Length: 152
Image 1 (tube, one colour):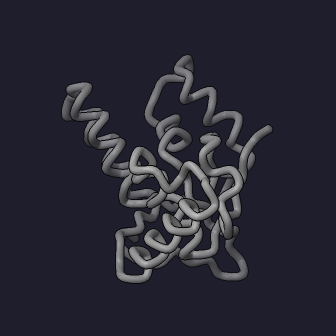
Image 2: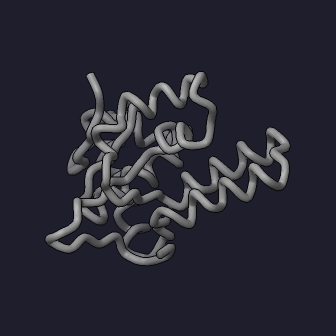
C-alpha cells in the first residue's frame, strides 16, 4: 500500500495520520512511556487505517539505527510499516507543506520553524488528504486547516 493516496470506502472507517510518538508506542514494551501514550490514544485509532508521513518512517528508522537494533527488531519495525499506508512526497504534498509553512509563519505559529520540519510534513500529509492527525504534540494545536485528534 505504500506510495498510494490514502483512501476509504463508505464501509471502512476513515483513515488517520498518526504522529511519530504515537506510532512509536507500537514498537516498545508495555512499561515504556510511549506505550502508555499509545494506550491513551487507542480510541482514536481503533479499527482505523493508519497513515504515516514518510518523515515518520525516517524518524523511526533513524531511532532504531541509532539504538543499534538487531536484525529481529529491525524486521519487526519493517513489518509494522508494511501494515500501514506510508505517504511519500509528490508535487501536491510539497505544495501543501510549503503553503503550510508560510501560513504558520504569517500567523506566528511555531510549526513554521526549521526545528519542526518533520512535524510540518506530518501536518501537511493530514491536510493534503483531508484526514485527521492523531498526535500528543502541542505544536499542532491551532494549525489552520488541520483536524487534530488530541487527548485533553
